[in-house]
Image (cartoon, rainbow, N blue to C red; front, side, top):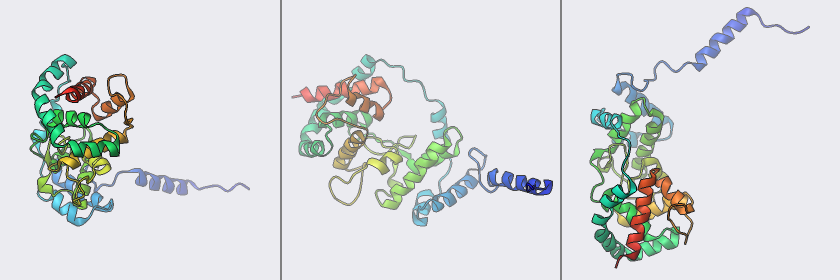
Length: 273
């Protein structure tokens, strides 16, 4: 005889299953109107993911919503400049300084190329375009920016993961929270790494025990090379449009105009006196 399940048992099972699939009532949803409740829930989640209480406290103490970051995120404009317009505006004013950086860090760039296969002129071109060689790294409090964007529902999962990695940077001892200032969307350092890229690709190239992409040029340049190598940079090959290495540059920045400008700037640096 085939066993049967009573309607009562089925009803009880259905109720149990529905409870399991419902989100916890205590969890504060993104954009719920209560940032403090969301942040408290996030702290619990961060601890459950193995981040130390010390890093959580240091990184998130006093963090508030930044409406200015939300305003910027909502008012982003589509990039419409042509290559000629963008490169003409960005490259000529940076050629001389870039050439000087090539000379100043020549031995470091040579060691980096030996290690990662990425030529110095490509790294210096990115460095110049991103932050004017470390001059303009941004003034936004990184953790506050990331917490704001994680709380906002537009890309909550993406920025929640970045916020967790920002706390891991603190936990690892690379930077103190107060030093973590950068672009409004959470990019950090002289070549503008998101925290997830920092955790994956940042290297301590000068051997001082810290991966410091805010203040330490050898770490900045080597980490940028490590990023490109991680996306498949081919040692000794061209980086012009249509080449495999140009496709790697587009992993750095999806804009074809930006990637072409990096490639063009690097060629100019290679030919600079």
